[in-house]
Image 1 (cartoon, rainbow, N blue to C red):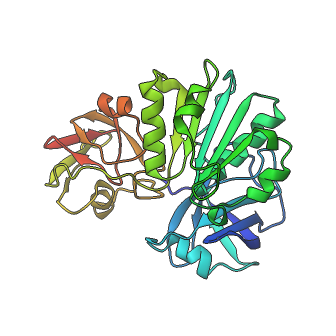
Image 2 (cartoon, rainbow, N blue to C red):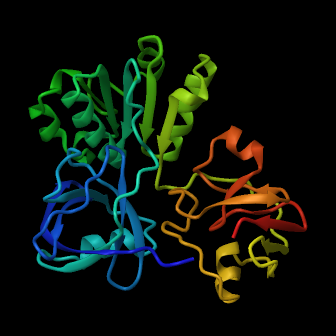
Length: 321
């Protein structure tokens, strides 16, 4: 597979947004327009030292003079958010991927319910701007432990759609997000979009499913992997449908790593099973899904998998590579 094309951008601004969160404004290094994007899209940021990390675009879709990001410094950082906070400087030139959208709005939804936890507000900011511009009905609920860890609060208060924004802070009088009440108050046919910590996503989706919301109206995105069962950690083989090549995947090595060692490149980004970049069709065999991206129904179909983290329950997988 060919490498993902990249764009050269310059860090025009780097500002604190909240405790442990910084904002980046990126512009094209050549001064020209950037590719257009849709609400919910993200870019892959190529950082000093080699990490490549996905970050959601939070500015209104339609802007091509800049991309805005909000980046949380993760205490368990593998080098990505740490590099953003400690190494990036205004004026620095970086490579990014063109925008991709794995968390798109449904244009003809009768209503939209946006639920954000912490830094999960970033893609939902773009969604709120898009829905407001289209005069589409929506509500945005933004939850955080405390106001000082919540980015974009002042910006939301000034937004033309501020009356549709509801803030929930654990340490204030209004208290935490009243999830049951929020879901019960949604209009018939509402589409749900949730982004944030894995616990919030899982609780929100579970509560919606318990109320009979169909999967087609449930949308989520997280760049933090959810806990997954250990499953079978032994070795197995993958066969490439295009060439018939068979590659052994030993215990302790991912499919992506084993393929790379055999000279086969697979496009990846987060390498944690959360962004969907390495989604690959499965033609035969049974995957052992260990991602946070596929829905339960998609997992049960066993016809696609995230090869950066998932493994196999059968001795061999045949992949559409």
